[in-house]
Length: 315
Figure 1 (cartoon, rainbow, N blue to C red):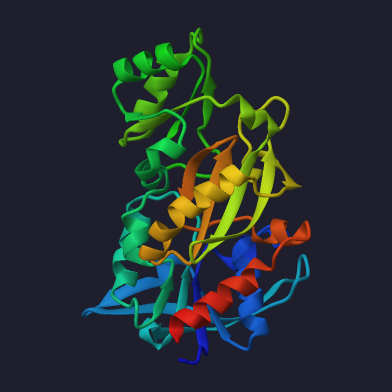
Figure 2: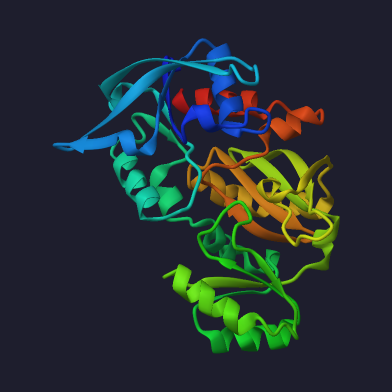
C-alpha cells in the first residue's frame, strides 16, 4: 500500500470556519491523528506554470478548541505533485473559478489523489447530476423560460424555485400557485444569474425535515435530519435548519443502493445526498457537510471511514 505522508486542503481559509459543524475540519483532524502532515491553501493560491501545478501552502496544525483551533507555518510555494492526497473542499458557488480549479487539479489526479475526482466534480453539477435518477426525484424543471415555469407551477401548484448553482439554501423560494410575486422573482433571478433556474414540485414532507445522507465510496455511512424553522422553507443548517438524529428508512437505503455504483464509477469518495420524504433532491459532491453532526448524535466516525477508504484507494 502506498504510504500517505503529505495531505493538502484546498479550502476557504481555516481562520473563518466554525469548527463545531465543519466537515473539512473533521477530515483534517483525523488526518492529523493518523500522523499525516497537513498543508493549507486557498483557491486563489493555486497556480499553473509551464504545465505544472503549484500553490503557496502553509503547514497546518489543528486543535479541537473553539477560538484556538489552528496554527499555520511559514508560507511556502510548492509543486503540488509532492502531495499524496489533496482535498478539494472550498465551498461553492460552483462558478467558473471553481470549474477552473478542477481543470488545474485534474493535471495532478490520480497520481496525487484528489478527493473528489476533479473532472467528475466538474461534470456532475449537484442539481443536474441528480436528474440521472429522475424516478427517485420530485418533478423537476430546469429552464430560464418564464412561460415554462408558469406552466410547471400551474401543473404542480406549490413549487420551490432556486438558482441552479446555488448552495447553502441561498436564493431558495417557496412559491404557491396563487403567488403574485412570481413575475418579480423571475425578473430578479434573470438579473442575478446567467444560468437556467431550477423549479421543483414542493414536497410538504419537508416540514418533517430534509435528510442529509452521507456516503463513503458509494456506501451510506450516516445521516442527520435537518428540520426547517417554523417560518422558513429552507432546512439547510446555514439557513437555520436544526440538525436532529435519524435512522435510514428502507426507501432511503434503496436510493443509496441505486446511486452507489454511479458514485463509485466517478471516483466520488465523499458524497452527501438530500432526501425529503421518499425523494432525493440533490447529490452534493463539492464539499459535503454533516460529518460532525452525525458524530455528535452518536453516529459513525465518518472522517475515519473516509480515511480508511482513501488509504485503500492509494493501495
